[in-house]
Image (cartoon, rainbow, N blue to C red; front, side, top):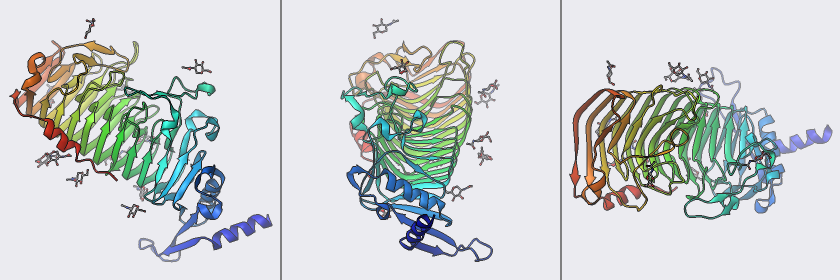
Length: 483
Ligand SMILES: *[C@@H]1O[C@H](CO)[C@@H](O)[C@H](O)[C@H]1NC(C)=O
Ligand SMILES: *[C@@H]1O[C@H](CO)[C@@H](O)[C@H](O)[C@H]1NC(C)=O
Ligand SMILES: *[C@@H]1O[C@H](CO)[C@@H](O)[C@H](O)[C@H]1NC(C)=O
Ligand SMILES: *[C@@H]1O[C@H](CO)[C@@H](O)[C@H](O)[C@H]1NC(C)=O
Ligand SMILES: *[C@@H]1O[C@H](CO)[C@@H](O)[C@H](O)[C@H]1NC(C)=O
Ligand SMILES: *[C@@H]1O[C@H](CO)[C@@H](O)[C@H](O)[C@H]1NC(C)=O
Ligand SMILES: *[C@@H]1O[C@H](CO)[C@@H](O)[C@H](O)[C@H]1NC(C)=O
Ligand SMILES: *[C@@H]1O[C@H](CO)[C@@H](O)[C@H](O)[C@H]1NC(C)=O
Ligand SMILES: *[C@@H]1O[C@H](CO)[C@@H](O)[C@H](O)[C@H]1NC(C)=O
Ligand SMILES: *[C@@H]1O[C@H](CO)[C@@H](O)[C@H](O)[C@H]1NC(C)=O
Ligand SMILES: *[C@@H]1O[C@H](CO)[C@@H](O)[C@H](O)[C@H]1NC(C)=O
């Protein structure tokens, strides 16, 4: 007891206390305090070789237990190898420029339950965050069993039986059942599996975050937001192999997600709703986003009966191209689909979706595909400029319903393929076809007969063009800013 008390006194003495008077507080009797503790003062060596797990965790625990309103855990420059770190209420990790948290690569570095495999995780916490300008690194390449340009083969930690195949790897950063989460000014790099995972959270802000994942590694998603409300993502730069911004509903609905001012490159979908889609998605806005060289641009991949409504995509530039068909995506700039994943599953409906001010250059057309029991209702395209060309040698001529449904189906390419739609307005839409490759696929609009009802085409134009788009593609590509 005495030594613990002494330890606490020393800890307080060795820490910096920053006081600031709260202007909002009705009286100034209780000034807000921010306590700052350094992991170095708790014995972390930061040499990248020795595990710093215990010093890091004891600093966080001391920080969270302190009486101050907010507390920062500072990582000075250095490389901190660690097993899972548990972030606690009231604590912000301040990973300084030059500092890196390095995730362990052994199964015993992670908790027993596969659902808790993260390098950094906050569970049931409030007012938590990560910032500082530094890096969290998952050492994803250490999980590659065989490198392959098309798709790497990954190791599987299936020893516990909790997960399947190669999807059995630790995620990088997770916030589970948290509220008031803020992640900003930090780089998240080389996740072994999903990168930033927000689950059942309320009020999350993610801004000025840079995410980098190996382009050939499957499942290294950028940001997965699951069963959470009121999430804001802005000024993010995501360059990774798998889906970049990916809202999902697994056990509860997802409301109010806004993502703006981002730059994205991915071998899968840049924006993807699904495919886990058991509950409602409502009130999502995606604005001012640049998507380059991706396998799919804006995607709704609804497969499990959840309904989707009130979604807006605006001011978005897209280039999509084909990659190896083992990755979901067929170069569609826009992909709106709902179908039952397996026989007997429900089909969710999708309604009130708008695409405004979108420019795309792509190797494939737009797919708008509802299903018999899950139609698409009230879709609107306004000021959309679509250019179709071919510049890779992958085969075309498939509609991609994966995962599940009818999988890959042979179907000639078209500017916009439409099936099972009630209510579609296409206004100020232009389709341009690169002359060099138009032979097999200058088919602007392709309707599945008797499934499309109530459509309006206003100021719609489609025609061949002789413009060379390679320069334009490069221009768009160069707009990505490195952090
Ligand atoms: C990000 O962190 C760096 C390094 O700590 C700092 O210089 C910079 O001001 C921070 N930027 C923002 C937007 O907070
Ligand atoms: C994963 O492990 C479980 C239990 O050990 C086993 O039943 C299952 O077949 C394994 N699956 C794969 C894909 O390796
Ligand atoms: C949301 O969380 C931030 C901290 O991340 C906090 O400052 C803000 O007050 C919260 N907003 C609401 C509406 O709870
Ligand atoms: C999100 O809002 C819905 C509807 O109010 C609610 O049922 C759900 O529990 C909320 N989720 C979270 C994580 O707060
Ligand atoms: C979503 O945002 C709307 C409009 O701001 C608000 O009325 C609603 O309560 C929010 N939903 C949730 C679940 O917080
Ligand atoms: C759009 O996002 C970029 C960053 O990707 C930013 O520089 C620019 O100011 C944003 N434009 C608007 C109108 O907000
Ligand atoms: C899209 O491209 C246009 C024309 O090059 C440019 O003015 C606009 O800022 C770009 N917007 C985004 C979000 O990249
Ligand atoms: C989707 O909407 C249909 C029709 O309103 C409804 O029957 C179904 O229960 C909804 N699905 C979910 C998962 O809420
Ligand atoms: C679409 O672009 C026009 C012209 O650039 C602009 O005035 C309008 O506000 C934009 N619409 C949206 C919803 O951002
Ligand atoms: C036809 O579609 C428009 C726009 O999507 C919608 O406003 C209107 O209610 C629909 N009319 C009928 C009869 O369904
Ligand atoms: C689909 O097309 C491929 C060639 O692209 C062909 O080998 C295959 O037989 C076709 N399948 C069907 C069902 O027509």
